[in-house]
Image 1 (cartoon, rainbow, N blue to C red):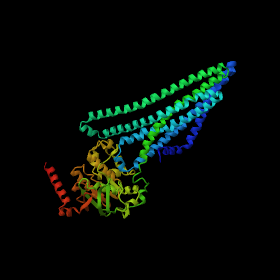
Image 2 (cartoon, one colour):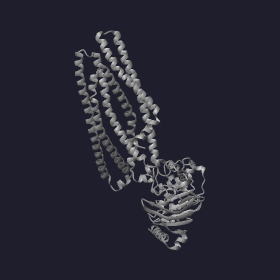
Image 3 (cartoon, rainbow, N blue to C red):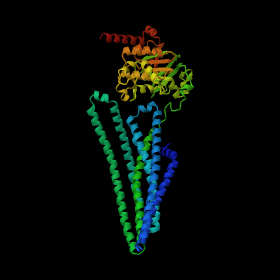
Image 4 (cartoon, rainbow, N blue to C red):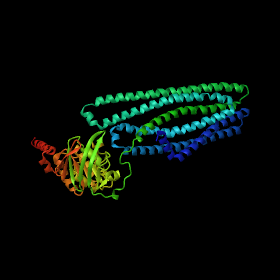
Length: 580
């Protein structure tokens, strides 16, 4: 689907209001064109004899025509601009919905600020194209066409002479319109760069201040802001040249017509009333041509923005775009099987021939060096990345045969980086299950070891945290994320190094609480700490995407491999910390 076809699709959704608005535009144009005819007849009659009745009659006709035109103007704006706002509403919802469905890999290559610029500035420009640009272009075409027909009736020769201005106007519009389009696209693209820069600085304000980079960042922003102003000035220079040239052309045309018309009046070939009407019609025809220049500008800006939006819309949705079934429709025990799983990312092998059987209610620990493939394995289980067909099964069912919505209802994930929203702690936990009660949220917080911290907060679980949970410590963030996963009551619980930011004592308390939670559900614990996985029913060690060791804590210690070496080193580190 091209940008133009996508735009026409949204027009089609509101074709009846838009057609009604177009009929009001026709009515407005008709009564606009009647008024010069009334004025011309009035001049002719009053030139013969000025009577009260003539003045009253023509006064009422002019006022009445203007009033009806005003009613149609109001209706056309109310209907068409209103429809454009509703289309903007639909487009914004569709754009946001599409952003939610895009694969994770897409966001790894995009800047948040640029996407926000497209969702705000570009959508507003498209709305201006749909509403004001469409309304004024239709009105201009009707008025220009109607005025020219009326001018032909009054004096064909002068009408044809005045038509000379049309190709000149068209040439100016064509020449400047393309350049305005290119300049505006450049301005919008750079605004996305600025938005991305500001967003990154605000999100990383602690890093900026920790490295005392405030002044450098201010100077960078000033430089980018100056570039943005310069690009806007280039656009302004074009428009500042375009409109005066149109005005100059109109002024010349009025002088020419006035000269020709006065000669015809003197020669008795044209009445004064007809000449006055002709001048009014010339004004009715010329001024919409100027408006048409403004409309072309809006069209160029709108289509440039539509292309930017289209660049996002054409990105295929990732796994999970389909509608999922309700959570209660399909029950699951939690048996997890991984068979001959090999996965590459950007041509680089990440996992190779991984085989793992996890029974319902079992706890599996996964350890390995950074980059060994632990997080990738978890991402494949949740279909954050799409696994090869027939490699991962839940209760014997290939996960690709299960809707992504249903699959993720079964799974509770605590990621390495705990993202929290600028809401209360309770609402962040409730994000895991919208219908969770206050008691369930408090229970989940207790299991995650968060109760002691919450007791010191002014509003307890109702305390509002800052953006990304900036008012919480790293450990508190992780425990809140754990509570969010626990409140889901998932059949499969995945902890992706989620205890890395808590101290050893807190870790032990959380693990003690999780021992109760783990009963009856499958648990996968990824950690670089042996203390987090030593009580697991089974432990696997990943090295370069391959399972190199597997067994219980005791059997792996006896094997004296990577796991045993890791255990000894961490035991020594813990002892040194205690004696320090």
